[in-house]
Length: 172
Image 1 (tube, rainbow, N blue to C red):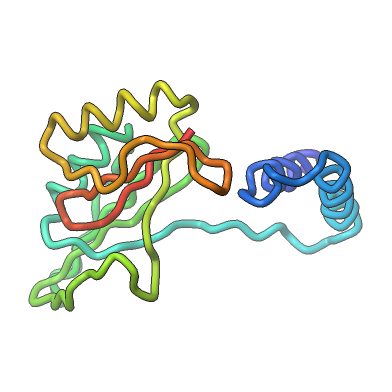
Image 2: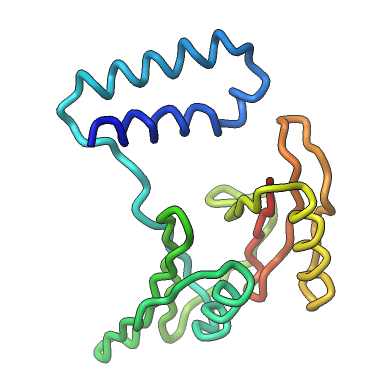
């Protein structure tokens, strides 16, 4: 169990944006510090269990994530008293997204540069897949807000807007 925790901690460091531009010795030192802390600690390692977002069209949102991102949806939940409905969508590597809806939701506009969550990012594994997937979503009518490109922080990415106005980042 601890080996798995150490591996997850090391992978977390290796995947952080700022580590990509640091020298190997800094990365090794940081990873070593984390690994040492994991081995000494009896506390469980924290991880994000899921992210949740409200949507207006629950079934369409579920279909989008299933079709394009390979999500596996649970059977759903419905609170008959409040009208609240939700699905948990599971992705490769254990990430989960809860999509929810309820009657009479308000939507106070969505400026791209606002406080709060900005986007969900999906790693596709290669620049070629980012290019192909961006083209597929564009051909299917989704707005591309930033075409595939290399960013200043070391990512190769693009960004599209889903049917609810949420930004979805596609990255290597």
